[in-house]
Amino acid sequence: MKTSKRLLFLALAALLTLSFAFAATANAKMVKKVDNFILFVDQSGSMAMKGDFKVKKIEMAVQNILALNNAIPELDYNSGVYMFAPFEEMCGMKPYSKANVEGAAKAIDTGFDIFNRQTPMGAGLASIDGPLSSLSGKTALIIFTDGASNIGADPVAKAQALYAKYGDKLCVHVVSYADTADGQAVIEGIRAAFPCTVPADAATFADAGALKRYAQAVFYGEVADPAPKPAPVPMVKETISFNLNFDFDKYSITEEMTPILSRAKALLEQDPAASYVISGHTDSTGTDAYNQGLSERRANSVMNWLTANGVGADRMEAVGYGESQPKYDNTTKEGRRLNRRVEILTK
Image 1 (cartoon, one colour):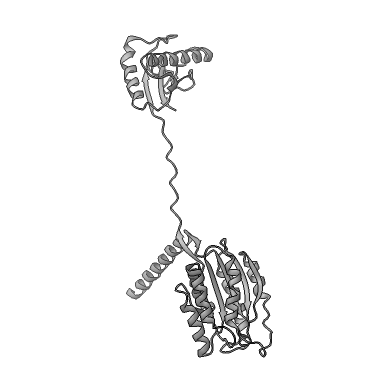
Image 2: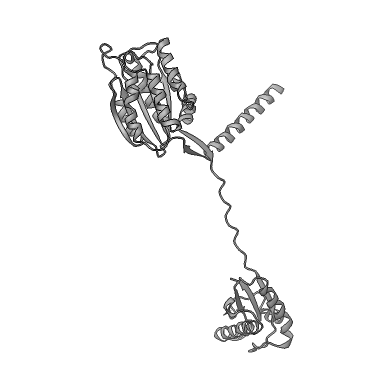
């Protein structure tokens, strides 16, 4: 029984962990690490061999490019696909789209002959400097190669020259299909020229988790979205309410009203920037039209008193509501008395 409870606890803990992880991911925002990237594919004779793979290395490179393309978020990169040994443009630099990269990858010839196809890898790195020199911002150059180089300039020296020219604006990453010690040594030499390099091989692309980590390390990061701002709290209008006991058809300010109005004036002066509505009301005695006019006269009486006692007229507006907004029961004498009121509300 204890074992069952422990297993249940562990299962719930795992579920909660996954839930929190999902929530963190769902609230994350992707931000690009580079402005441009180039996929640079070795199409020399040795890449037409299977080596340690069940398919040709060039076929493996195409498969890996397609997998990587699916893992790259469509942020506002510029991208291109090029070949070397010999140098060839499959897709020139343009705003990144998965369709463009997929089309270029699928157009790569994987049926070329092994023989009479040497590997001037150093020349290829020199040639890619042309597209690189036209770019602004940070660039990732991802090379898909087995590292074989049997003619021309030293590829490691060319990689070092690229770093000397571009510095931290260029990062070279090599996806290795090396099946010889010499080929792996060339790859390690190119990687060593760039402190930012992220190594990978065919196994990286065969594992979904490893591929996602690689794509994130090279292309983008995730930052938590800022918490949404709380909705603004509606401003509650401050009400200064007092009863002025007007008799029927009376709206003049009397002496006994002065203390109440003085307190109202003091409250208005606490916030000189605020504006106010002086609202007049009546009970239900009389016609609607008569009560409307009476309520307006009561509101104007209060506003005139406040203006005469130093409150700016531009801060106040007198409005009459007649009998339309009773707060108390008009069927009783006391209710009608209380409804004969004036209120001051902030705008």
